[in-house]
Length: 105
Image (cartoon, rainbow, N blue to C red; front, top):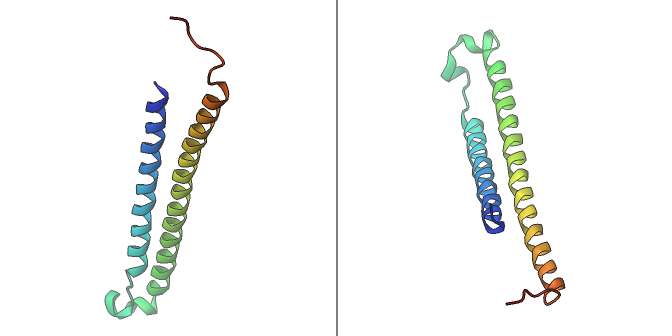
């Protein structure tokens, strides 16, 4: 695998993780917007604690999706940082050793 292909692979992977982060963020927003109360569930929902249970589950799902979005965003940013560091190091080494060795012929 060439250097350019490796850089492209890092970018592709970073983009995939970024898209995953966006999808999880969208799912989180959708989870928070699903508000079901006594009216939507039934008159007995409040009496048996279903509305409280629903709120707890909604909170848990929302928090898990938010955490997933944050962490996959961090993975994307880390991959882009690695790609950038490779490029900077390659350019620096190229400048440092330019002219130090030239092939004959």
